Image 1 (cartoon, rainbow, N blue to C red):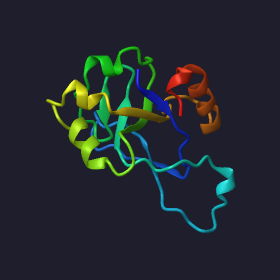
Image 2: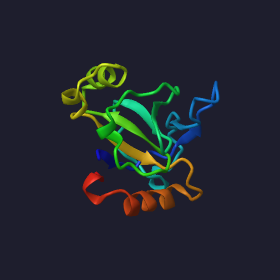
Image 3: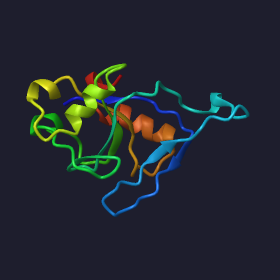
Image 4: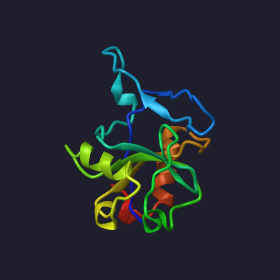
Length: 143
């Protein structure tokens, strides 16, 4: 299981949904100088492909299915998770090619990590959701 937890900047706004298959996810907003960031969780902006796990299947933020191998999502919880499919800094084109391909190899997928930063259906505050992620996702997969 390659799930990794990351804290995410909470200057977020809902993403409007063009179709019922598109998950309603949060998107970052432009930082304004009058915002006191000490009141927010902040993390590095990962340059990957946004992924949404609905508890059963993995999709992009636009609702397109991700053809990840079964082993990639085996054992993932039956709870919605929002995150980034990511390989590393400066490797967006590489991860994008893998994630958007129907024929990517296991070798290619073994480099991909799902960096979880939210539980979108959890009713609590972000701090409460973060604590739930820390308690429920395996420790060895939390960054």
